[in-house]
Structure formats: structure tokens, C-alpha cells
Amino acid sequence: MLAIKDLSFRYSRHSPMVLQGVDLELEDGEIGILLGKNGSGKTTLFKNILGIQKPQGGSICFDGEDLLKMRRQERARRVAYVPQSIHFGALSVFDTVLMGRVSYFGYKAGKEDEDAVWAILRDMKLEDYAARNVEQLSGGERQKIAIARALAQEPQLLVFDEPTGNLDIANEQLIIQEARRVAKEKNIGILTSLHDLNQALDLGDRFFFMKDGQIRHAGGPEIVTEAVIREIFDAEVRIVDMEGEIIIINGGQKA
Amino acid sequence: MRMNMRSDLEKNRRKNVAAIAVLAAAVMALALVCLFVGSSHMSIAECFAALAKKGSAAQVRIIWNIRIPRVLAAILAGAGLSVSGLIMQTNLNNPMASPSTLGVSNAAVFGANLSIIAFAGGFLDTGNHLSSYTVGANPYATSLMAFLFSALSIFLILGLCRIRAFQPGVVVLSGIAIGSVWTAATTILQFYATDVGLSAAVIWTFGDLGRATYRTDWIMAVVVAVGIGYFALMSWRFNALLSGDAAAKSMGVAVDRLRFVSMLLASVITAVCVSFLGIIGFVGIICPHVTKKLLGHDHRVSIPASALSGSMLLLLADTLSRSIGNGSALPVGAITSLLGAPFFLAIIFTRKGEHN
Image (tube, rainbow over all chains, first blue to last red; front, side):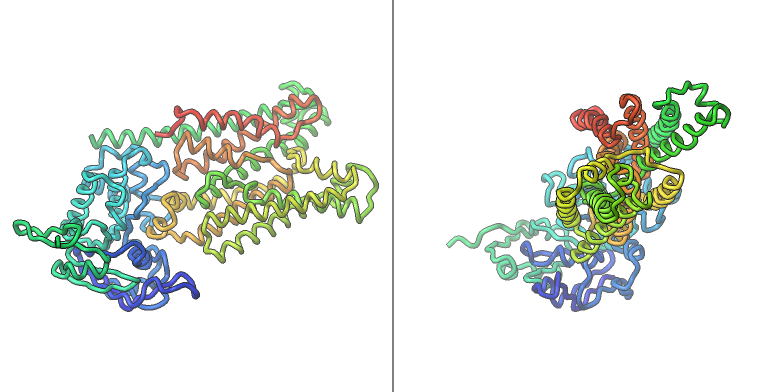
């Protein structure tokens, strides 16, 4: 579905490369997770995929179509975004989700747009929130509304930047579950970044380890090894198998 | 539960429509009051007669040639300045953004000062009369200069900001910087002015709706209607912009183009109103904030509501300025601030008005 080839990006002609030679592939309904230190280029890669930044070289294809040459509205119907910091403005939850359909209706929302929003709210058990002011909701609730809005775009790929960054543990689990459900039930691909390696292992199908604007390792859960984590994060961890579940523990082997 | 929520949503929407209807009715009522109040102390019956073009020639002239253009100017400029402020605030994601903070008004003041002090007073030698300073050779010369300089200032800011891809912070800061250059230039100009030139220039800066004529009203009407029409059409895109540039772009909104066109239109509206009427400050801050606080941020509601509340404030201020001025109208710009500021503070410090 998503195929990125040899992507490079820098902010201006005189600044250093932020992304170089990035290759990435993701299939429908797959959850891909970018792992890397802060500043390794994860958010920049997301912004390139979303058309927020324009790359200097390489291609981003979506089912064989060049995403970079697509009109904004066309792209918005394929790729949706759940940003890292979420703020909306004082609108009702319903109108906030309806906003996600602007690439379909343009100037004035129609009945089919409103019906689509009701379906999403019902599906995510958010119907009771419809008339509430989105600014007055908690962080986790707002994150859910942001997901609902992204789903209103009826995308094939959902880009989640640090979805659990500002959440407490209960909300973190809620969002992770919601992401998994969306990917598996609706067959929507998800590309996300997570700091918590255990969460990443729990959620992801494919893993992309980034360092200095490059993807150094890509593959299934088998590539998540102590050596790779040491290389990417400069951190010592132990990977242990606990009754069939792989768990990553901070700190190296005790001497 | 679902039906409940649907009816709650419906209730909210009806409340918004009702609020806009009430505002529209208030504007119409105030416009009538504004027509009936003035230094000539005509009775309401006489006003109605004059409105129907019956009554003495002087009374018909007062209503049709003085009061109606003035009332129209208040409605148009109030709506235009208020919506311009709202759009600038959304575009720049900054609650302090307004025509005056972006230097558009300062540039207009400089242009008018240049016209009054340098051309009418200094070079053209029209004699030492106040009227010849403000009017000069052509009654539109000062307005034209004010407009040209605010347009220049707008393009300077927009051009500078294109270099930095319209980061909102950059727009606000360059607006402040360029605005202060105009203010400095105005000060220097005024330093060299004659006494009469200086007072004419200062009087110009006091906003005065009395300068309006049918012709200036027409020009304002076209500019304000085009601007507000465009903004209203783009309501959903402005709503998306409230979530930030990245989110709006990801929803398919051409953010840079939207920001360029709407900043340009908002600035032109301001430039036209200010160059015809002088400085009418604070409308662009007070009215949008009060409407957003009471009715929420949805631009489908806040654009018409800000426009109407702007008209309302200016009509109210003008009526007051003419009734307490004892024959001569007090500067309407001062009254908008005197009226608006306490109300504004009350709204800011009370949580009761919070939209929910």
C-alpha cells in the first residue's frame, strides 16, 4: 500500500539533511512503528507523508499513485493524521469530527457527511459526547476525538505521532486498543511512533529503527534485539522471555 | 441516548441561529435609534416624516444626506473591522492579532499625516485654515494616501512572511516592527508640522463616522461584502485551522493560500475603513473575543456574529458620541474603547459566559 523510496528532506538549502535515503513499506491493515531517539527524523518523515513538508528527493507512492503529485483533498482522503499535541478550538465534538470530512464536502457539510460522523461516533462509543465542547474534555478523550476525526477522512493510512505521549496509563492502553481495533477491523494501515519499547512490541507488526534521518533496521518483531536497541538508542536493555511474552527491561546484564 | 444527543446538538444550533437573529434585530433597532438622535433635536415624528421625504427640506437633508450615510458607515465599518480582527486572530493563532497590532492602522495614520502635513500644509500652501488642511485640493486625497500606505504596509508584511512560509509568530512580530516604523515616521513628520497642520493631522486620526458619504459607503460595502462572503465560504477551513497548520494541511486545506488571501482581504477591509473614517480602535479585538467567548469558535457562527456585534458596538458608540458631545460628536474611536473595554474585561474575568 505505502511505498517510500529513497526519500530525502532538509529544511533549507544550507541546513543539514533531516531525512536521507529513507525506504519504507507498509501493507493494508498493518501497524508500522517508528523507533528512534528524539530528533532522529520520525516526525519529519510523518510530515512528508502527510504533505505538510515537501521532500527534496525520492518518492512516496500509495497503491502505485504518487502521493506527492496528488491534490491536497485527494491525499487527505487516503492519509489522515493524529497529531502529537492536540488542540481544536471550542467546537462541539460532533462538529470537530465533521471537520475531518472537509476534503469531501468542501464548503458545506451534507447529510451523508453527518451520517458518516454519527456512524463513527457510534462505533467508537462517543455518541454521548456529540454535543459537548471538545475543549472541556480530558487528554485521553481528546485523543479519541482526534482519532474519530481522522477516521472521518475515510483514510487507508493513519499517521499517529506519539499517540501516548501525554496520557496516563489507563488512557494509553485505551488508545493502543483503539489503534489496534481500527487497523484490524477496518483494515486501515497505521504508522506511528512510540517511546515505550514494550508498547511498541505489543502493538506493532513491522518496526523501523531510525537514526540520523535514516532507517537502519526494518522488519518484524524478530529484529528487535538488544544489539539493535544499543545501536539506535545508545542504551543498554535486556530482552527477556516471560512465559512466551517478550519484555524489554531497562539496564544491561548485572556484572 | 442517541436521540438525546441529536436533540442537544439541534438545541445548540438553534441557540446559535437565535443569537444571530437577536444580534441582527439589535443592529436594526440601534440603526433606527441612531437615525433619531442628533444635534438638530428633531422629534421622532419629524424623523419619520423626513425619512419618507416629507417635512422641511433641511430635515430631509439631515436624514438622507447626513444621518443615513453615517449609520451605514457605522454598520459597514463595524462589521468589517470586527470580522477582520477575527480572521487575523484565527490565521495567526494569536488572540492579540488585530488591524492595529499588525501595523495596518499605523501605516494609514502615516499616509494621512503625510497628505495633511506635507502636501496640504507644507507644499501646496492652501492657507492657514483647518478645513483646507483636512480637505486639501481633493477631499479623497488624504483617504487615498492613507489607503496607499496601509496597502504598502500589508504587502511588505505579507512579502516578508512569504520568505518564512507564513509562520504566525513571524507575521505578528513583523507587523509590530513595521507598525513602529510608521509610528516613528509619523512622529518625525508631526515634529516639523505647523500648529494648524498638526491639529488637522491629529483630528484626522480620531475616528469620525461623519466623514462618510454615499460614495465612501458604497466602496466600503463592496469591500466588506466581498471579504465577509469569502470568509463565510471558508468557515470550515478556518475551523480546521484552529487545530493548527499541520492538522489543517492533513485534512486537505491549502493553509498557505488560505492565509495569504484572507490576510490580504482582512487588511484591505481595514485599510478602506480606516482611510475613510480614521482610526476606530479596539473593535477588532473586543467584538470577536466576546462572540467567541459566548458562542464558541465555530466560524459558521462567529463570522456573522462578530460582524453584527461590530456593527452594534459602532452604532452604539456613535449614538453616544453624538448625544453626550453637546453639539459636536466626540471621537467615536475613543467611545468604542470606553464602552468596550469594561465589558471586555468583565467577559474575560467571568467564567459564566464560557461557551459549553
